[in-house]
Length: 204
Image 1 (cartoon, rainbow, N blue to C red):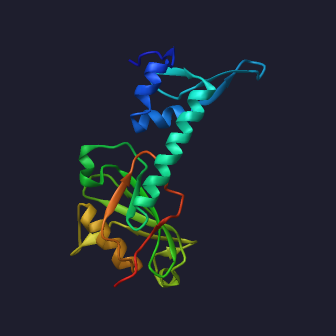
Image 2: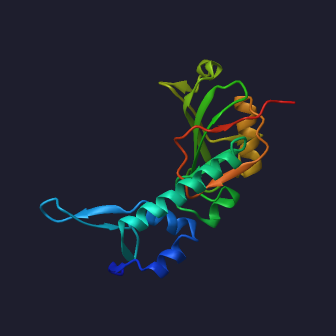
Image 3: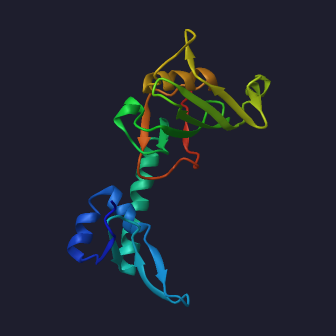
């Protein structure tokens, strides 16, 4: 049985607490406007459960400024790492990939772009991935490439389904797309899955 939502005004004290937590900071920064039945603006509200907070315009704008600054710092710090955005609900059963559905958008060392999605199937030992966009024309020669998508259902290792780990994912991306990524970083707060900025460093 679900608990009914309640509403509180975000006090200055609570606001100062929230901006120290990235998830809560994002919640305030993304507050939406609420209107009456005639479309007249009433207040800014967080989208949260079980408590929705009414926030002031000043709180929303300050939170948005802080969030934008932290987002820019995250992008700069990880521009040469393989950034993975979590698209599903986190869970321990998905191992060190942390989520049943993940996505990454990157450039290889030649500047070709690829958007790759991966998702676990019916059990945690089975996985599928697809490329929804790639500048790499070699992928188009593959029998698995159809209608702009490259699909490989059931990633295999020695003809057996395997648990996809961070290490195996890094190896798969580097081998398939000619990249040289050394590290995976998870994005849980910034929603960068459709923004291209992680670039495979050139080989030295």
